Image (tube, rainbow, N blue to C red):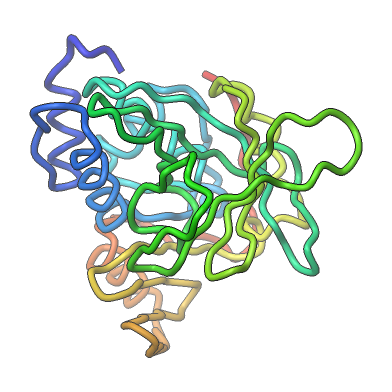
Length: 276
């Protein structure tokens, strides 16, 4: 995002209900991440609508700001990185592998996260608006002690070296359970094309199995999976069955601000992945 285009920045800030920060400090980063999490949904609907997804900065901004949609990690963190840079933050894209069942690691470029430097001498910070149910606030990337967050106790530790060279990988844990393994080397947006292609096409990817749309709330989380609306408030979980297509489309609009003219298909719809 060109920092000389304030109207683009202002439109993004309006989208997430935030004001332009006076300086790129930790307090501003914290507020921007929270606003993003509570307004822009984590969703994989493009896969199930047959929509093209372009891993190019302007296309991501158009989707989130102009079309008022969400996305998954590559889209959400890619666009958020552009906003932060335009506001004066120094941002580096990082790749991560998600810890799955039985401790298995996902593919390289499984996830995108952000290393953010502020002008107040704190950090650097691990910011993330694209991992679904994760930390509400940015985490101090260099802190190896538990970090308290409204969503749990997070800890960033050195990952074990399992053969090959040691690049200083880090495991991000939530309440003692590993979430993803972070590679600290800087990456470019185009580097994530392979991971994005896998998650849009592979039957082994959870994203191709069914449509999902989810966002943070001030008290928990709200998620729409197919015809099921799931609401979490603290430790309580409520499920509502939506019987008609009209009810599902209305739920997308009401709870996520997403206006669709048709329901996403239950299976992937042959989406292509390009880089612009």
